[in-house]
Amino acid sequence: QVQLVQSGAEVKNPGASVKVSCKASGYTLTDYYMHWVRQAPGQGLEWMGWINLNSGDTKYAQRFQDTFIMTWDTSITTAYMELTSLKSDDTAVYFCAAEPGGTSRNDHWGQGTLVTVSS
Amino acid sequence: QSALTQPASVSGSPGQSITISCTGTSSNVGSHNRVSWYQQHPGKAPKVVISEVSKRPSGVSNRFSGSKSGNTASLTISGLQAEDEADYFCCSYGDGDTYVFGTGTKVTVL
Image 1 (tube, rainbow over the protein chains, first blue to last red):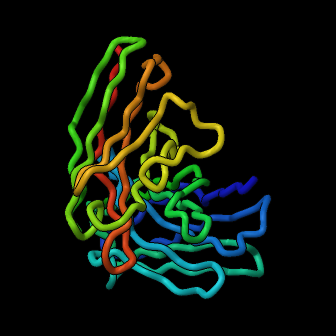
Image 2: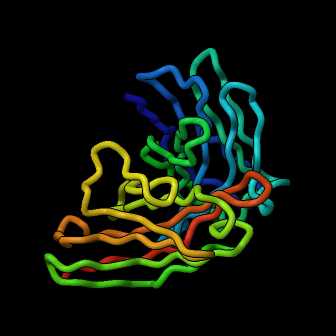
């Protein structure tokens, strides 16, 4: 069974960057994609992008193309997301979610990481 | 892509059936059978209840079913139970190898 454990809550100033980790264990994530999804307080889910854990290929939602970076460290089976030039409306819970390739089904989710952007 | 459109809230009594709609466009829901539905309880991570329009993942109650017609997908919960009270989000694969979520529906069990 895949388990995803994310890093802890962060508080950042506007204009700063934040990096969140997502440690995968319990299964070899061959042919998986890792998605990142965020949820602002009291709001819905917003898809941010995916990374192919085999090839490292990435796809970003258009609005995040310039400020969002996803990476995967195979040696420690950990995914990272970095969001730069933070603004107050980036305050949200950020989730990683693992999709068995080609299913478009996020079977496994991290517990979420709250990122608060405030001066 | 703009968020898929869902009703803000749907309610029903225990034992009843409810249906949640999810309307997109010909660039996402209408042209791909890769629509999934997620259930989210307060403070928890989402959980997939339907994938590829109508497939139920292992362990999900058979009270959950999905369908699609044109640009609109639907999730039906039959035999409504108290534990079904949650937020539900649809999600569709779309052009450009991207995904988009729905606006979300709060289900209340009366």
